[in-house]
Image (cartoon, rainbow, N blue to C red; front, side):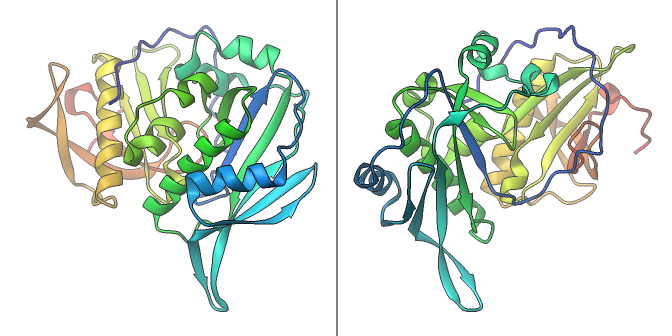
Length: 300
């Protein structure tokens, strides 16, 4: 499903800033970028399209500034009873003048050729979120969010791109409309980012992931040298799939298959350790110790 992606050397130098803290299970935010201001779709159309993608949906609030919908097939148990997840959409507005930070933009690999154009040309936005969804089973929430994404893309035909706040990932609307990603893999594909960094002044490199905390699952971290980064990126996606499919069975000091000649191999075992992330945002990650390729002077 995931293809190798070429990582270009970035000219920018970024500083470590672990004052940025991640909030596991936080509301999931999708920003739809537009070239021109667009009206809120009418209430009946919004309800019909959301029902098409998400099943039983009721409109709870509607105005030109915001609309809210109860996703009745996705309920969370509270002391007072089961309450449906709320899906919120803002009216279209001008984007803030403050641009996205350079580190985030540098890691938008899925629209690398278009990212600067999109961010320059698209000066309007619609923001969509879920609310009260943290209590859902993680698979339910992942499926619901991606169904919500596809409903939004249908409701806003002038959308140019979608930015996923939690992971810093961005896709053109065209790619979202024309994807053939299996339903159970859409969240990993669209909403979880695999980032790549060169460590200044060394031959060391870093591959890490960002976005799994929405589902209360761990992100990954590889600090290494001497191996093709594309191999490590593919290993990370395979590991994300394994964690997602198996409710994260990995315990501290467990061993996993390593890489031999670009492929995962049971003949090479790498240790897993729960650690704090080396690159922002501050969060817990599974650090993959790559034996002779490992960097960072760690003595596991």
